[in-house]
Image (cartoon, rainbow, N blue to C red; front, side):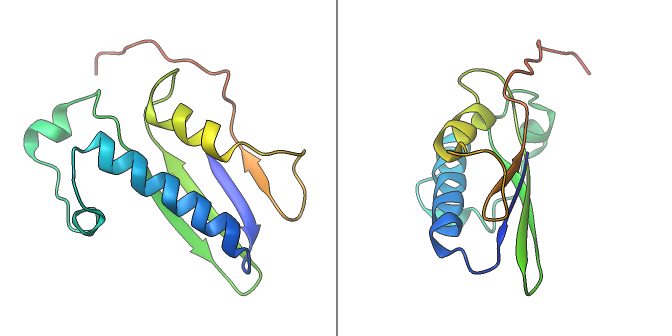
Length: 111
């Protein structure tokens, strides 16, 4: 998922970061958000293809913020939960643009 918002969009930033934090605390079984920034995945975590957490990075310039998120898709998983909490209320515009297809469903795959 890609979300693009103006740089000065405090309400959107708070909503996006709050959802991200809440979903990852639950998915990684952590009790405090301080642990998110220092969490290292164990070898078991890295091999667990069903570990339900979001990965994200943010690009910022003086005009906009661009969030790029990834995680498990499908109903009940972290991407679906994040999408439902941050779903756009209007078509894409200059104040909020989301690139994501919630209809894509992946079956369990063995890698």
